[in-house]
Image 1 (tube, one colour):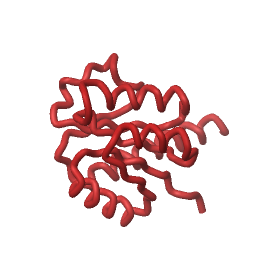
Image 2 (cartoon, one colour):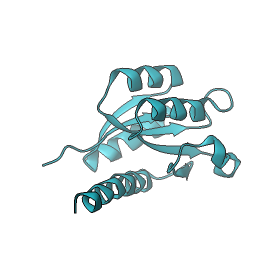
Image 3 (cartoon, rainbow, N blue to C red):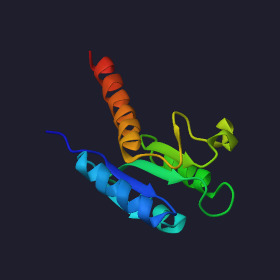
Image 4 (cartoon, one colour):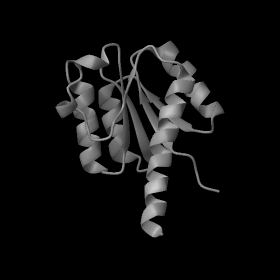
Length: 132
């Protein structure tokens, strides 16, 4: 049985963060929580098991969440990234990493779980296609 992805959830809303983490855990995901971009950067550098980054682009100064995702993806090209934002239409595609969806906040935890599942399943399907 394969291990579920380890999700790093970076959010500025503590209550939403806890609710989302508990919900993701009920879907079988392991979740790390942080509300600062600095701590998220540290966790991404030191924990090689993190395979999904969910980052609130409304945190910190403009573009900080986008920069975190770019730096993380450069270090780990297989890292799945999901952006969250109150105004996703303001995120320029050129600023986002390839293949990273954006979920409008506030979102429901099951919506995030569905997006994570799609990203993980897409990679598994692609790997199976190459193996065939």
